Image (cartoon, rainbow, N blue to C red; front, side, top):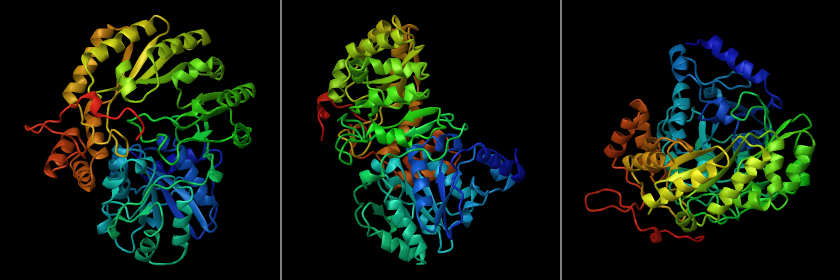
Length: 511
């Protein structure tokens, strides 16, 4: 258990380890909050980009705050959430701007507010309470469960919208007047004012690329400078929010621009984006970075691109990589075609060969289990492929239950069921017979994610109920039932169970 002194000293220690921290006086100060711990939040490129934008606005400054690693220690010591920069309680700031990455971070949002003595629901906050703003990747898909808790929701790319917020905060207007003003602006949604939710915002290409402001060893991506050589995606995978119809598809940044923004002291560089290997000059960029003696990693490796550009695999190994990671997504060729996923079994086998030739210790393949129309024969095909690959290079599967997201062609696709997902994983393990490692994410928490991904405001309120009741899976099930939360457009049989439709019922082309 930690008291206030230990908590403050811990924040000061984090601050001392950082390079690039922005500390400056300004009359308008925003607490930029992340509803997960520091190690995760500081690995978020979007969070860092907004930190830089706020600090670049005249008269404004941002201080960062995170969900504590040990929430109960904060409660026991009666210490509110404090900012990293000044160790000041976030309740003393006029505005709290939260970056929410995905659905299961909602309880973290509640914890940060509650620990700081700020009412969780927007309707219960008064004029003297901070303005609570929510944005982040979740807003591309389904921000509606956030509505009962956010005074303002910033939709989509926020590099320009955040400056409108800064201007409004500097105006001296009342909170209500600020919300009325911002609620009329594109990409900004004030749930309490009603009306339709606007389209997600797209930032000017002149503001690209997003990049790290702070480099620290205390993150998931230790001491790595992150930068995006592209934003968006040129592909049409039917399950994905970030696809070619989202905000105009993929926008690339010239390698020369990327290279001039990488600081001289950065020894590890992470290239971040939805489809980095689709960049037409990605090999040139990685080659130049590797030649400068830097370690290089890429967030999204596509097997077809690796096969077409084998030099890239070698460069990534020379840049310090030990595990080569790409995605299969669907278990079989049939499923991948239905998903408009361009990866073939032959390409995955060839990627394994390239990994072995380059000296990688392991190949990791991401996979979705529980897709609509998925059958045991699809998993048998995957097991056969896994056995073939494992004879080439050690293999692990990162298995995630399929969760249908709003604003995708598979919006409304049903949930396979916890028992069915777990049965499929056990079936796959038995077929592989230990030839490949299987690392699944929780089927139970995937169900909670699904209900939030497909739900409305009642799903957000049920999440609050579950959080107040301890946050267990059982608490979520009871809360969803009590508030009659139902997935968007999910198809059900007469007995109320979710029905798996024929595979052909889901689009296989961009929509």
